[in-house]
Length: 165
Image 1 (cartoon, rainbow, N blue to C red):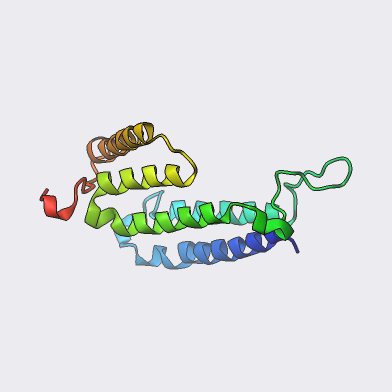
Image 2: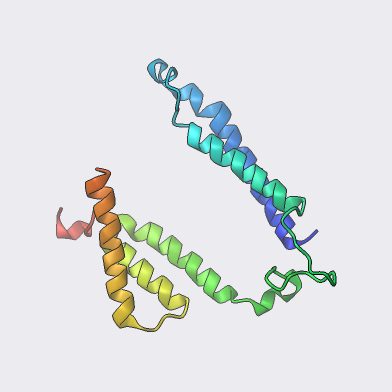
């Protein structure tokens, strides 16, 4: 079985476990007055689980594959025999940066952590114009913080702990 189908099988198992939790364990913890609502807190996880299983089955059964007329796989597909030729270093560095971002979000504050994450991620992907990366990262982080804090009304600590606020 090809690598993408193995990944799809693991993804289906994850979505099935997530769906089991959403369908059978989340709803029994609801208080009685919330059980009459048409939309429960578990509605979105249920939809995600079902959609994940459907997408995983599509990949598992190969319904998305398009082979060329000569029978060779498309050049855009991942060839697991040539996996060492891909930029795995970049992918692993981005994953490590995501973990560092998640761990630094509370102590460093949203603005600093997000700015460093966006600038670092673009540097990992090959951008070298720091005079463009930093202002764009600052503006994007500030815009997202403003939307979440002011428009949605959800508190997001913008600055590190030692700066007060």
